[in-house]
Length: 424
Image 1 (cartoon, helix red, strand yellow):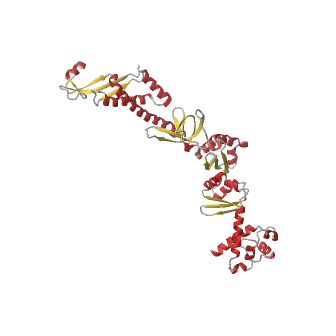
Image 2: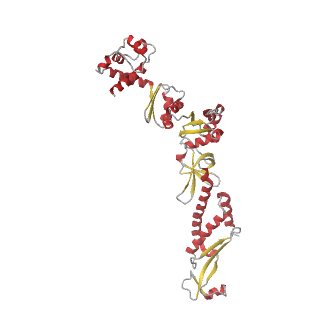
Image 3: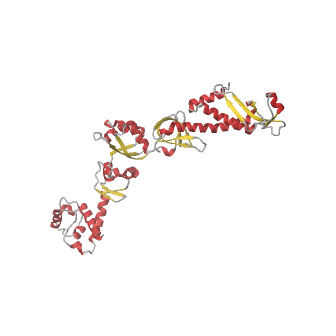
């Protein structure tokens, strides 16, 4: 019994999931190729058989029976052939047994290389069969080693997966032997002819999959994640929608006293997660994302949204390194700009003062501001601001004193818009 071969069969079946007949066929093909190339006296007609239970190897070659041998690799003399088969005739083919030890070390080395290639192909097929249907699922493994200090090799059981540096947050640190969860991103061919399982912990879908694991309503599609964006390791934003009017999508994902979302945050090493109601309308979605921040003013263009917020709330909207504003822009699918109230007020005051120097005679006509009630117009006139020019040149702090309840900056905004329309 060839104990070494039997041990290989059992290991590959148990650890790699490769069937014994696949291994035997690979080894037979390899030995046949090695024999043709490296064993003297053998022609092209070589066959190899391996017994699946005992591991015994039998090698055969076929040669043509001739009267006089011209090519020893392909032919055998009638005299030699009749020693083996007395009834044989010239022109027939005879099968000869070749002792495996005749392969020698060179043949064995050549066979070893081909066997490795064949088994890689078999292992690749097993990997594809087992993992290609699991793309998008979360799988668990143990960190086995590091390649060049960055790419992580994860032991998944029968195979190893890789977690490239770009596929996990920079803030996360790992050690060999640790358990790790990741999303199965893809199964792809390698240059060496095998296949590798590629994992990720930085993709937004990893967070979505964690929520689906934790929230039954997401699993049964009562609640769906309509949009999700992420800055891995720092913040994730997702917009959710419920197909059941009795189910609150945000509350469902957060859980009672935050129990569901806390488990996900823990898995993500305290990454911030914002869950908001989804809306098809980008502006309504924006308001949902900003709540409870008060938006003082909002302007939209085709691919751009601009908002004005108080100085105190400005850092909350922008976030660390502008990350929050960037994620909001990705969620609404538009360029997103934020301005501080104090900066906007200074800009308005400058613009108003510049307009007040305009020689346009219409600025000296009786005051009439579009979009402002007649009562406010009359109150401004009664307080001495009876023309646009006088209003433009007035001290911003003076107007609210003389006309209580009037916001100078709202007025200034309307006046500037009015002047732009007039020019246009």
